Amino acid sequence: MKILAIETATEACSAALEIDNSCVYRHKIAPRKHTELILPMIDSLLKEADIRVNSLDVIALGCGPGAFTGVRIAIGIAQGLAFPFDIPVIPVSTLAALAQQFSKDYNYIATAIDARMKEIYWGLYKKNSSNIMEEVIKESVCLPSNISSPTKNEWFGAGTGWKTYSEEIRSKFKCNIIDFKDDVYPHAKDVIELAKPAYRDGKFISAEQISPIYLRNNVVNQKNR
View: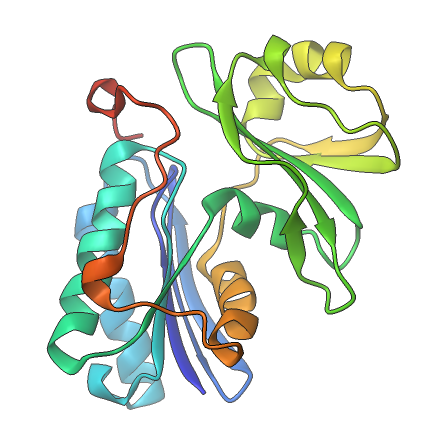
């Protein structure tokens, strides 16, 4: 299988290409530079693998939640690449991709991405038997003091929301927090890991069907980070 993934919903910009379980990627923390970085990243990956876009079996993307402009960049690029060749597309939650990054080490992940306006994008995930992170609660945007907390198991925290609001989150968290890492961002290679089982199960869509996950209604007030 040949799968290309794009993730631009946060300060991090990344692209990854996996061919027959061999993955190469590009990743850079570059706020507000995604538009100038993402296409060269994709181009370099395709050249490295010596394939063309029309050879891809599927394109996956992180579709939010995250910065409004960043989410739109990923959708626009995915649609531009997929539509001319009728390549199927798999949208993946940005929060789920963040959780997937730690699937080898932890069974339960509490993700928090700084959403600005004193809020966070919040999600809880547990690892299934195939080492894929699955949603425990519906993702939300909320004040750190209003998070939905699990009631059992030990959890690992991940994401920039833990950097700014760790005390507030801890005060509302009902379970033991083993540790947290607050300087991590979603990565395209983890988007691929989430997209592969979806592709095998036939859970893909056409390019024109891609919908962003914003969570917040007044997305026009968000700034790209």
